[in-house]
Image (cartoon, rainbow, N blue to C red; front, top):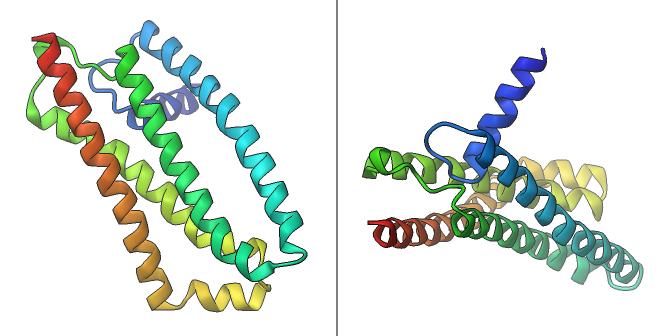
Length: 177
């Protein structure tokens, strides 16, 4: 069971940081260090921000209901971009010289963008559960126009993330050659 969990964790780490190639000990330790740094930066922001939002929701629930999902999606997108940037800067997601090709580069970027898409879509879908009644939330969950809008927003975040990371990786590859 421990081996299965370790394999899943390593694969999720490789997908999150766009790592291609083998996961050696240095990359693993550096990715854990970056994960801890990002949690230490983002957790207080989310905790304080959501606490303030809940306090404001006592007086103006409509404004908080509209802005809270958007701000949480932006924070998730910022976190993913920060993680990708730090991974590129520290050389975690840098491919080995003999492995660099366009196919592997695009595959690792698609994997990273896939995790960004699912995170943004889940955040935009589940955020209304905190400020709406359960029956209204379930109705919105099955509304095709709202789901389409959430898919479009998550797709836009993923599109921006994909092309940003692609440009950064191309710059890194050109700098190494």
